[in-house]
Amino acid sequence: MRDFPSCFAENGVQVADFSSSSSKTAQNLVACVHQCRIRGRTCLISVTWTKSLMGQRLSIGIDDSANQCVCKVDVKPWLLSKRKGSKSLEPFSCKIDVHWDLSSARFGSGPKPVEGFYVVVVADKKPVLLLGDMRKEACNKTGANHVPKSAILVAKKEHVFGKSVFATKARFCDNGRAHDLMIECGTLGVTDPCLIIRVDRKALMRVERLRWKFRGNHTISVDGMAVEVFWDVHDWLFGTSLGGNAVFLFKTEEKLRFSLTLYAWKNE
Image: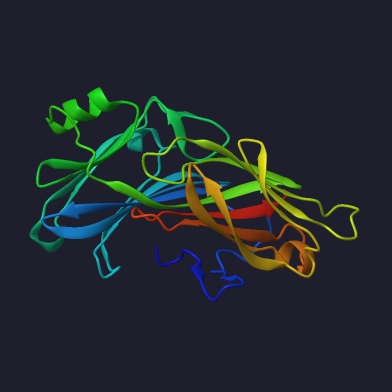
């Protein structure tokens, strides 16, 4: 989570410089951070899916409560020999096994499979995280009768691409339902562009005079929860190179805090 944007003051976000490159070389990326307990320790398991001209890649990292990397596993699923496998690690005298099966995975336009896969993390022979729809196969692999839901999704980061409309699916809490999230920015041929954020096609936020309000924050309501939205669209409006990116941060303040960070890349 070290590279997620941080919120400062009331009127903007500080943007971590993920990439200064144009959208031609920007990675298609989805990263999720799950909080879990391993041997009584609070740990963060980050799962990152990327897709670029070099191919697809899966990276799994485990950080301790001090945000220090404990161990990391990299998988390159486009290599047939790596589509199914496992790796064992022993950080802080704890045996951690990571198993994955991507041999039947089906992908959409994004880097993360939509079905036909599993990724499971096991600590001391106890599954702590299971991703994917092949739960039975994952249980057979780990020897567990079932995989308990012990990990909690606390943060997600995603790169989205478009010209003036940027869309994705979003859950604003770990057990919440998926919503259609859409960001619209009218900048082509408009002297005074505006920013609109829609959830399930309903406009929940509209920012006019965007050239004066290219950074800011606003609170919307989703599923009865207050969600604070931070935005920084400076590079969209004033960037010197084509295909710059804007950053949007959606943050809940409920008991289970969650943050969604979107890097919106403008295609040429």
